[in-house]
Length: 164
Image (cartoon, one colour):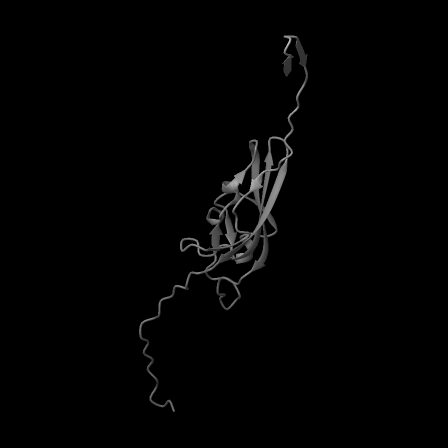
């Protein structure tokens, strides 16, 4: 950078120096509820889609470009979501049990499935100056789908004549 100064007599002095501008400001998440409830869909009654979460990524800002953002989920509580047959097997859930949809920490993408229950969803961002920011949201995936069943037609049982 060059700086030039001129006094009233017309004398000029010029100097050149280096100017370093540093960004120490981390990305910022704005206007995000840290606890959110979402409902499982009818098409996929035992999971919720992460695309239904009010994502902090859409409300993020920074004074420089945000390089990357990731979403990690930790399953912290489970709700029983499917009835069992006489052998104890889930009769509706295609995965065998709701616990297997998400267990432990999982790196997610938008539209990933999370199971019925309570999850901690952590969003991590990093800007071009390597300033990190993290926010954690508690997401409750609720099963609002009523069971579907069909009652049998009337059943007639004929008893033998000697039945008391």
